Image 1 (cartoon, protein in one colour):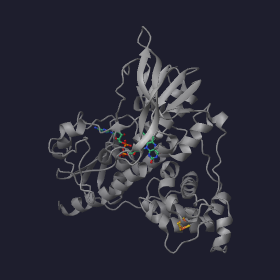
Image 2 (cartoon, rainbow, N blue to C red; image 1 turned 180 degrees about the vertical axis):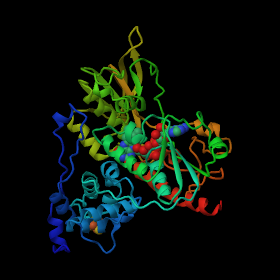
Image 3 (cartoon, rainbow, N blue to C red; image 1 turned 90 degrees about the vertical axis):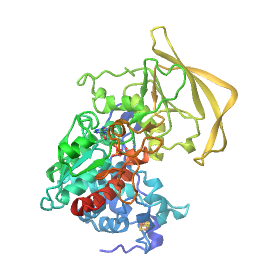
Image 4 (cartoon, protein in one colour; image 1 turned 45 degrees about the vertical axis):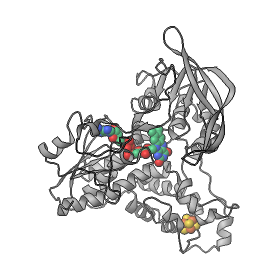
Length: 478
Ligand code: FAD
Ligand code: SF4
């Protein structure tokens, strides 16, 4: 049943709003904020698609989902077909439907949004709808696994890059084992992104599917410590290795007083809450700073900073400050996350930079001295550089601080794999088209190659690597 509406009529349909938990209520719990579209609303949203001859949205998608076809199928009510179509390009659609920055990708180039009068088709909402429909109905059909090739592949790291490679190679009949340093699988999807944005059960379901097609998992294995890459290849007989260890090394501000008690890296703060369920006190008695009634300051302007400050409110903070040295316009966080943080009562202190932390006689954080900034000339990133306003210095009382100003490459594998070439920042050098590293049989992708990026880019890198690894495993050419 094709859509009978003329383009003009399609554009008159208002863009669907995502139903959400009330801000006051959700500040008290860790349940998911966005509740998902009902079927009728998803169909109505799909009806807004103009079915363009030249669907620019597909060029905006890093894994090139056939978005136009997905919209057509959803409009027709063929939800499972739509889900299967998405899965052809994207093995984690319920995850990307929730966390992809669509506003900078497919939706940014959607033709409906070209005129300032109209907003683009809500592609992310539709993707999430089909993935949830498929999962909730228990209808996920994973492609058949091909007969075993007898080739063994080690994947290091269980984030989106590692999971994508594992899924693709297992389907092709290779014996894949994922080695994960932590006790839980999923990488940043579980230890970084909080439950209220991405429920752990959804990630677990995707991992269960990989298990069903024969992927094996070994947790609590730090490659480079427990076992080296060379030992995996020589001693344990792996024919190829994929390195997907992410960029999890915290960066700090480098200002005086940063060693005081009560100052956390975002990585530690979020890991304790997410992975060790510190939020579920007293059922899970994981020690974390007792935020109840306290003032918590989070430094940074990305998704990690938003996640940290919103988490602190859910842990009972009286005030959650988001302190960022540029203006809101330059914040790298997703627009939705900034908006949600504002709705939940986060206090934004933009154009503000920390100068020094002060503590009490027992070494606990008490306050922070802040410098007011203004925007100057653009820097190498194209964004206007923040410069201090002379004399504009204040001090505020805070009880804990979370530093969320970015991360670097984890050095362990580089240090223990001598013939692996790294760039000057410690990230692994690869040939972009093949994901090959400088070491024969070893491939890499995701944040450990690019630096901190996005889930979909990590998955895209996994896709490229899996294709190239399959060729290597099949014909041995390097
Ligand atoms: P990771 O997800 O980092 O996974 C790497 C895995 O390797 C980890 O599990 C780690 O424990 C393991 N590992 C590391 N070293 C070893 C070792 N030596 N041996 C064995 N295992 C090892 N992106 C978005 O698109 N949208 C968002 O909304 C978003 N929000 C984010 C919020 C936060 C708090 C953070 C931190 C990141 C966010 N990102 C977001 C970025 C995104 O999550 C990452 O770009 C993506 O997860 C990178 O995937 P990856 O597979 O390369 O690595
Ligand atoms: Fe539909 Fe927008 Fe893609 Fe055109 S660009 S096919 S309107 S989603």
